[in-house]
Image (cartoon, rainbow, N blue to C red; front, side, top):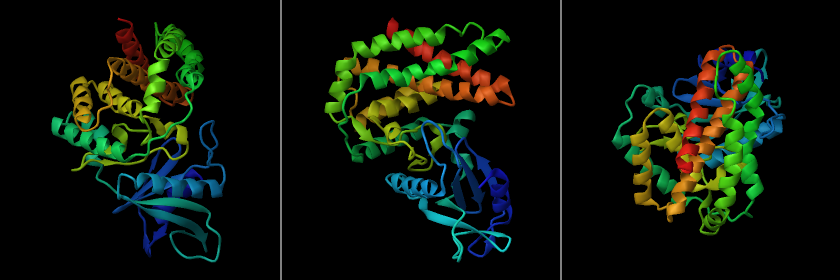
Length: 339
């Protein structure tokens, strides 16, 4: 399906005999139709270097995988439904003699006013929210399957160093007056990261043997959390196992970096402390350095996302501001570890 067809489906499509009369929310890789009590997520027909949704059979398989993985920690995912186009009408979940033209993940719709990123922008995330969230995440991590992959130092280096792919963007916008004085951050950070990983390679490998690599969420930030009681996590990574099968500390670093990006360092510290009360992940002094490095890596990846978006941005000023924010965060974590 394309965007125009999804818009028509949202407005005129039929589900359980009634018109959806919904609205479309677009992400980089999906369209989500919000309609009444339900949400329907449709994967875009994309092929990128880290995912392949290029065929209908692949999209169906990844829809099934999404439901399966997210059911580990939430009950809002119902099932995968076929989408048909028949006699000039779009139908979700209806029987048809024709083959489906698309598939959708059927979910319970949650209140947008309880989404964590929305509440952070309103400065309405409380310590009680954070304590409850830490407990929920820790309990999920305790149940998650430990994994024991081979240690890959080069792969760790490459993950950080991929930020070099946006160096050209930073330089181009710097010459236009934006991102001034940021040209040197990326090459300096790459050199520093290689050195840091070599220094701490032994401890990183030890943590793998201690069972800290687990099949977790992979994309744990405030945009994927609703602050009900208990909090609801959703939208884990289904399209690339390696992004989800990581050191627990790396997962926590994303949540804490995200809070710090909203200038909520005290909530970030509280989250880590509360989590430690349920599941200890900082066993040695060196682990704290790894945690700070992981926060830097998460900021690195967010910077890269915004750098890529900046190339096609209709409003480059906002994308450049976001890129600058995450480069500054990454650099700040690096400076902490240097001191």
